Length: 477
Image (cartoon, rainbow, N blue to C red; front, top):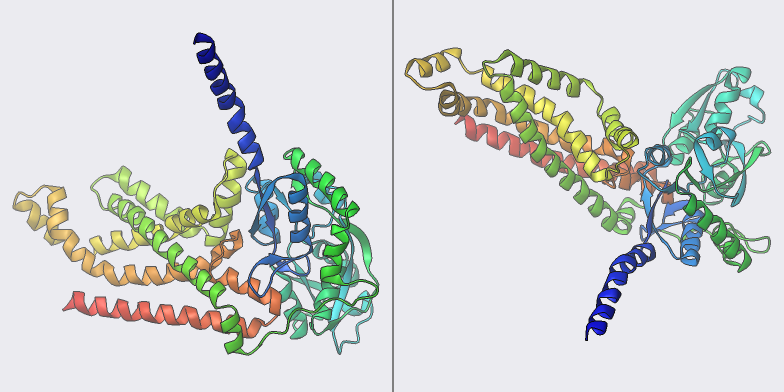
């Protein structure tokens, strides 16, 4: 009996020690950053699922090597910064393996050959860099094309204009604001074959290769798995099938995307689920942020009216700092700056809520403080002369009058918060603006998609404005 009990306890011990470890290893999920506005390497298809050469390759390798990936669409620049901060395990986003990047990142073996090309408008006569003198050239933030353009702009006398995504860069050339753009060869060739009205007047320069990147000195096991899996999918033919799927072969032309109804109504019907999802994320983000910002703002605002110089100083300092910081800078600082310092990951949504809480909360604190101070000082003096303590006089006499003054400002802040959520697309939150960018990357219908999104914002803001006016009338009556 004792031997059986000893055997059972031994089995339980080894299961406790080894079982969960194996389970965790089997369920290892890597957070992979990418930029889904970069077809044919990564983009959203008509069902708004992330596809492309890079996405298919990383998924095929994960399948071969027995791990899972969670794709994070945060844009190229944000993906690189997030990986540096430890927020992401790796980045696959058509990243050229330049010497500068090799200093900061560890790369896999090359998985795709590329080069930089210059593209111009279809009717343009520009055929060499010397003709760029005195002109503007569009580039995309943080790309090898941007680095190359910036390295030669003084030599050839042109200026660069920087954009966050490829579509806006192409549109700047198409509309004539810039005379040319610099882009990776396969990406530009794919866009032209899909109908983008640009042409390539020069041969590729600075030939290089794309690689999968991880933070320097970290996630070496992931690099090893990627290299091993890449060799396997090249050997079994999966790699060639993925390339042919998006780029065609010598005997088969590049497959065109399925024909879509490009009217405004057609775009609305095709993308209604994605737009509703983005709208839902925007509203949820706004409500959560305004809830926490209100609590934060009331506390800081009340500190500013207490009869205590120290608390007044704290309130003034907090309001000054968070109102003075641009929202974009604050978002990037919280999402990429703090994790790089502490080593702790912060989910993008949580980082967005914290950003809005501090920024919007500082504005709420200012009008809470201002609303209370707007009440006639004689009211407080009269209450205190009747024997009411400060807290009771504030609660029973001052705050009821101050709240009436604050309500219109509060609803106005709610509207501003809703609009400010669009800035958080920079850290990859899939709200309405980020949803629009992803849809445009697929169909290049920037004017129509932005018009749809602008109308959605206007409808919501109009409803909130009506609510604000109604509440204002009720409080004044």
